[in-house]
Length: 71
Image (cartoon, rainbow, N blue to C red; front, side, top):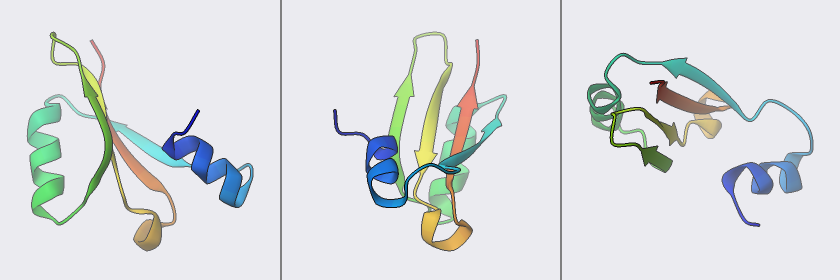
């Protein structure tokens, strides 16, 4: 199945794909990251406000950035 993680493994093999950070307000965090010019490569939200957002930061940071909010 195609996914960002599968594409990473196919291109680079095993290694660090992303770093994730918990955010108390995922919507605000995502808006701030987008305002900084970070492009979203994958995201998902649940009705309770929890979810995740992956940003395309590989070329600049060497890894993908994930912001998430747990339940």
